[in-house]
Structures are given as structure tokens and as C-alpha cells.
Length: 411
Ligand code: HEM
Image (tube, rainbow, N blue to C red; front, top):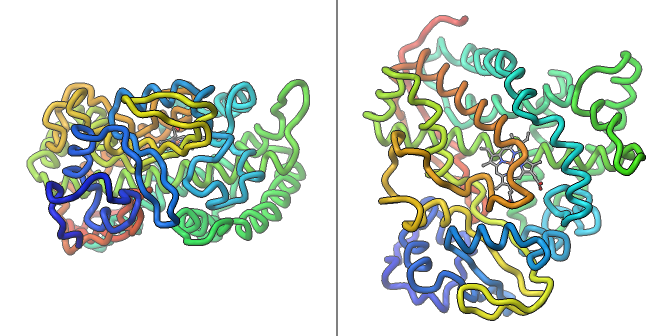
């Protein structure tokens, strides 16, 4: 546990990316001080270099919208350019592209995530949630993180991709490895997984073609074109990898942390049980309050100025979404969890620029439907043990959340 009080910290000296500040969750007091005293501050790193750490909502919006000055492509979205994957390979992922390349590829994927497509998935999501709750409902206890928050988004993303149910466990293992690669001390830690996934996706494409094609995402990507040319199998693979990475842990961590927040505020959980019409707004507050993707990096393409600081070409700039979602300038009394907060303004889905989360609609639907079914079928849900947090400064994850409830019938 971090015992150093936020007001005793010398802001100029600390490396806020160090996991030690996140052992008990996002260090909001420290971020509040940074927003007030040093909203754009030079953050020293252990290797003797440094990066800019940006904590205010308005500055993060400005960086996200200015892709010419702040590139995702040049240095990648993590601190080490080759974190997770070698930069050359990762640059095939939408998250690592700059316009105009980004615009072309985003259009392709966007078609799979229109509001209409998401609304058509309502029944599929509810069936997935029902199946997940059926597996634990008779027990009266379970680990919410592992037994409920993991299978819902994992099941949805694999189903959308046409991954057969028997392969979901394998797929889960891969996504866990990709996630761990983000925290790994050495770069390129997910390269092997991508090679394995490459073999798998290749076989999937063959199988789905042999079976006469399906309307899975894999097949949609196969039919898609950029500048009149189809995507190559390696390009499809990286999209596949991106969705595995972007659409899975994020939703899982939001659901698990969101439920934890509700369990810590039992009156608000009860309010959702009594009046499910509060759930859509509760989802927005949960997104804000949990902001599970805490930061992404950009690299300055030229000398520029931000918040009175001179940023040099090539400097890395960390945008703390988890701080922006708690910025007093846009959210009143930000550390208060309040499911009735009118339209909570947050940066959980990114800074609002071109990279704004493509799966936001799907994630919102998954979270809403999960909460609708959980509060309906487990109305007396309680926390039954201590939580275990993912040790990461980047992802706000819960790996364990024991709960108990009155057992009920399977559907
Ligand atoms: C609560 C769940 C989720 C959270 C908190 C989340 C968060 C984010 C964030 C912070 C970004 C970066 C935005 C930026 O840099 O401005 C992002 C991008 C993205 N997300 Fe999500 N995400 C979630 C769910 C999903 C789902 C379910 C999918 C798809 C199935 C998805 C697909 C993507 C993709 C493809 C991008 C890249 C967009 C681009 O670069 O243009 N996300 N997400």
C-alpha cells in the first residue's frame, strides 16, 4: 500500500507512471494536485529520460484533436515504442495510425459498429449475460471479476468474430497474454501470441469460407476494401488482435470496478434494483468513475507549447484520461460516486478526437444489459471478501471481487 500522503509529495521528482502509486487504485488526490499545480509536468523516468504528463480535461481534448502535432504513429501509444509489439507491426493497428491512413481504415471498422448494428445486438448481448449468470446463479457466491465480468465481453467479441465456443478458452489465454505484455518489463512481449493468432485466424478464414461464409467480423473485414483493394490476411489479423485487446479487458474492468463502486455505495445499488431506468446514467458515471484506460501516449511531431510548457519535437506526451474524468473544471465534487449525476462528462473512451473509442456503443450496451440482468436476478448482491487489483498504472483492473447473493433459478 502507498503510504505517502499526496500533499507530502514533491511533484517535480516523482515518476507517476510507476505502478507503486496505483496499488490501491487511481491516486486521485495526487492527480488533483497535479491538475492544480503542474497540469503539464515533466515526468522523470527510471532510464534517465522523461515524458510529459498531462492531467487536465481541456489539455487532453486539445492533444487528442491535434493529430498533426501529436502523433500516434511516430512513437506508438505506450511509453516504449515496442511495448506489446514491435512498432512496425503495431502500426497496422488503428490505434497507432495518424490521418489520412487512420481515416481510411477507421471507415472500414466503423461499419461493423454503427448504432444500428449495436441495437441489433441487444438480444445477443442479453443471451450472453443470461448464460453467464446461469452458470453461477444457483451457487449463491462467486468471484464477480472472474465469473461474470470476464465472460460477458469475451463471449461477445469472440461471437462477433465467429470464433467457435470451443476456442473461447484459447482466445482468453491470448488476450491475457496481450494484456500482460502491456505491463511486461521487456518490449515485444506479445509477438509470440500474435504469431499464434495469425495461424488461428488464417484457419478461421479458411473454415468460414468453406462453410459458405458467415456475417462474422472476420468475413466483413475480408470483404472490405481500402482504395479499391481488399485487406490482406495479415491486415485482418491485426484488426482481430486490436479488437481482442481493445474490446475485452476494457469492458471487463469497467464492469468489475463499476460493481465494486456500487457495492461500496449500497444505497445506489439498491436504487438501480428499485428503478432500472437509472441504469443508462449509472453506466456513464461508472465509466467516468472507473476510467479503466488510464493513459495513452502521443509523440510531438514539432516544437509546440501546452499549458505554458515548451514541448520539443520527439517528446512523449502522456494523456491521463483517468485524471481528466475527475477534473473539477468539468465535474463537480469528482471523487463522489453518484449514479444520478447529470450527463457525467468523462474521458473513459479517450480524448474525443479521431481515435475516440470505436466500441463505445457496444461497451455501453454490454454494461447496461449486464447491470439490468444482475440487479434483476441478484437483487441482494453483497461483497463477500477483499478485492484484488491488477498491478498496473495503465489499466484500472480488478482481478478478484468475491460476492454473495441469494441463489436463484437458471433461466
Ligand atoms: C468500457 C469499455 C471500453 C473502454 C473504457 C474503452 C476505451 C478506449 C479508449 C480510451 C480508446 C482510445 C481513444 C483515444 O485514443 O482517443 C479506445 C479506442 C478503441 N476502442 Fe475502446 N474501450 C472500450 C470498449 C471497446 C469495445 C467493446 C471495442 C470493440 C469491440 C473497442 C474498440 C476500440 C477500438 C477499435 C479503438 C481504436 C479506435 C481508433 O484508434 O480509431 N473498445 N477505447
